[in-house]
Image 1 (cartoon, rainbow, N blue to C red):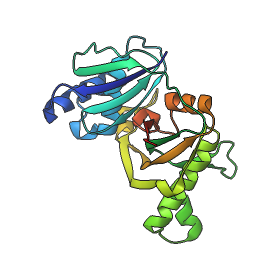
Image 2 (image 1 turned 135 degrees about the horizontal axis):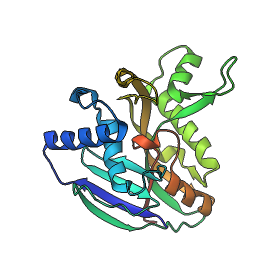
Image 3 (image 1 turned 60 degrees about the horizontal axis):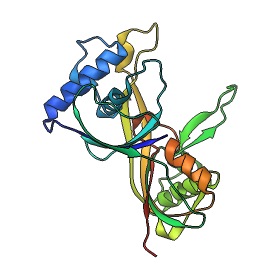
Amino acid sequence: MSYFSLAELRSKDISARLNISERLLKLSSGIDPNTSEKELQYADAGHQLIWSLFDDDPTAKRDFIYRAFDEDRFLIVSSRFPKDKAEIWSLESKDYTPHLVAQKRYGFSLRVNPTIALSQPYQARSKPTDVLIHAEKQQGYSLTSQEKEDVVLEWLASRLVSRGAEIERDRCGLMNYGRHQIPRRPQKGESNMAFKSKATFSFVDIEGVLKVTHPESLQQTLLTGIGRGKAFGLGLLLLRPLSD
């Protein structure tokens, strides 16, 4: 069973939301309570806020994906039913079992981290690399807006082939490209000073039309997402019916 939820923070006051985010983040990560509020970034704070809905099992791994639409509204797909123990949310949840039909077309919206795995000399593990940064290094110049869109859509098309869909290239567009910096949490044995270092990830917003090629595979994609950075609101594929 999976669930689709609209979650909205009850407080509209920015300082109140920051206080909630700060409290949850520090409690869950063991950060020194004297850490300044400036060091608490919304990307990670939003992640902690969503985690507060699924903290009934402290040993559980993340089993949800989500998309933030502003600082207080989130769409969430989860395998567990969300519970507002902190009493900070307005929640609307329903069972989520997507029923898809082969060859049917849908409009889609996706915020995703577009990376490719590049092998590294003398390294056993490959390194995830931003597909646009890699393309610019390969070309030796800054890409135009159209070239960036072409690279991103080619990347998405290649990812969806094995995930049960194909995009209609002339009906798709790159709506936004950005980068987030978030505090890197101290690992076990590290001092809290490690919190001051930053982790950076990129994201793109893509909208368009796709066609279902394998309903079961695409259904699984809707439940588990696409790409890296799912802990920070990336990877949730949203579909809407199209009128014929």
